[in-house]
Amino acid sequence: MDAQDKIAKILQRLETGTCTPQELQWLQNWYESQGEQHAHTFRDEAHKQQLKADMLQHIHEQLEPAYGATETEDTPVVRMRYWRQIAAAIFVGALGLGGWWVLNNWQSRHTMMIVQVAPGQQQEVILPDSSHVWLNAGARLEYPREFGEVRSIKLEGEGFFDIHPDAHHPFEVHTMEINVQVLGTSFDVKAYNTLDETQVTVKTGMVKVLHDQKGLDVLSANDQLTFSRSAQQYMKSKVNNQQIDEWAGGMISLSQAGFAELALTLENQYGVHIRYNPAEMKQDEYTLRCSKQLSVTQVLDLISSIHPIQYDIKDKDITVHRKN
Image (tube, helix red, strand yellow):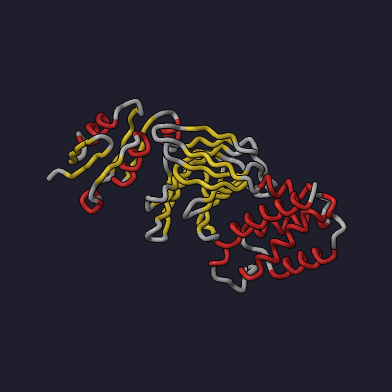
């Protein structure tokens, strides 16, 4: 492995907080061997200082959160007191390789694209590897302008993924509680930060689900994994994944959902705020399939025809109570 490839790999390990002291030492040794021989890669001193400041700022932002974690013997990570040395070494590494390959590659992989879906909308996103993502109302997707060795994205909300197969570049979906790893398949992830449960449902292929970097289970077609944040446990079951097609096709589709999920679904779809007493509404489970073309009043009337609830609407605020 030449120096260019090795520095690129260390950059990637710095992103994940898994850079070892030995790798840091190698980077520092390499840095000290370079001297000033490559200063001509910058247009002028002001250009050099601006790029350096930008990179230092971004590296500081990326590394600072990682050092709140507890260091273990199995995974030695670089401590916070080294961050300035790391930043300096990476900066000089970028200019020391003749130039612009490492710097441009570093910038491309750290330019993040963010998609936020408005209430009542759905959006299709084509990722840099030609994978497709369909985002449900209220979802938020974050991904790099250019993927590295691992195709890594972040999701809050619900998204259906159709992943371009690439055995050499694994695809990862990161949510607040769990991560999903896959080479090429189609699957749904429902990961709302305000809900206790995160769900992964596989339509085709296989995925691996992890929590705190530990494997929970491997899912294949029609498998669904539900992870509970409060219980720190998961349940795996067989489901009819028709529900995925329904929401992507313009339906409100819920199966045995709690009222918190029902309320969040309506808030995302109609841009309203629903007030309720969690203790009062925790008894029932809701299965709902209806067109998104219905008004929120029509949907609430449909729900109240089946479940003992009543509601009051004032502008965008809706208060729901359980009937006595």
